[in-house]
Amino acid sequence: MPSRVQKPKAGSAASGLTRRYLLGALAAVATVSALPSPSHAKLTTLPTPLPVSMAMRSGDFRKAPKAWLNLIRRHPKLDPTDYKLAPITLSAEQEAQLVEVQNRVNRLIYFRPETKDVWQLGVLVGDCEDFAIRKLDMLCSEYGWPRSALTLAACYTERGQGHAVLLAHTHKGVYVLDNRRADVKPWHRLPYRWIAREEPGAPFGLWRKLKA
Image (cartoon, rainbow, N blue to C red; front, side, top):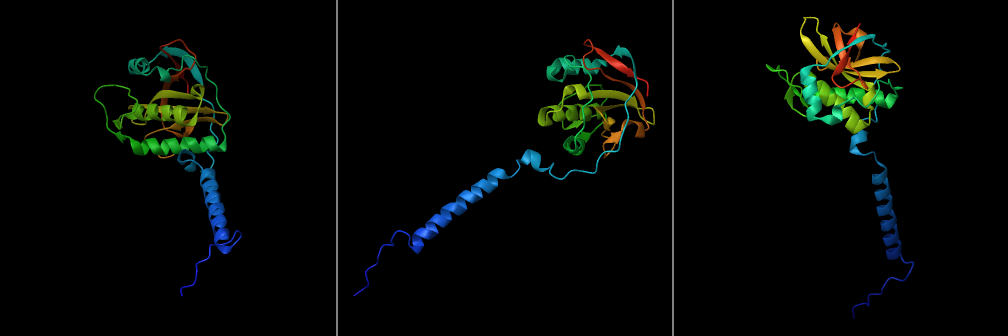
């Protein structure tokens, strides 16, 4: 006669396996929950600290570029009028964010000179100012940077060409996020002739001349 199959008693090996399975599953869920989210995972390895920069001397007010005025009208969230220029105390994580945004946007946008001066947000093909605008928006919207510490700026390159970049104002000085460079640079290490920058808190339509 075939032997009768007996049900496992409480506390038997089968019940122990079931309990161990449940405990293992719960541990796996807890481990996954503790992992950094994708938006922060890329910042777990901090880059080499940025070299010390210095502040930039500014001068009188001047009219803002017309293309910038049109940009602000289309995208009011970029308007710095409600803020006052305030350099931030730069942490190691924020240095990593500058480097990350510099690299991401320089890879994201394909550079193409424009025949008409139009400043745009969110394009995949654009001119120098489109890189700077995207970096500004990304630092503010994705990483929580204060608008008061970031300014768009105009300058001339070493060849005398008009150029636009993003400036980050910090306790270590001013840094440049530039589509013509791979690294985030102190402003005084670039061969540019500086013209003007945004002035957070200034009346609408005014920028600040740069004496650097």
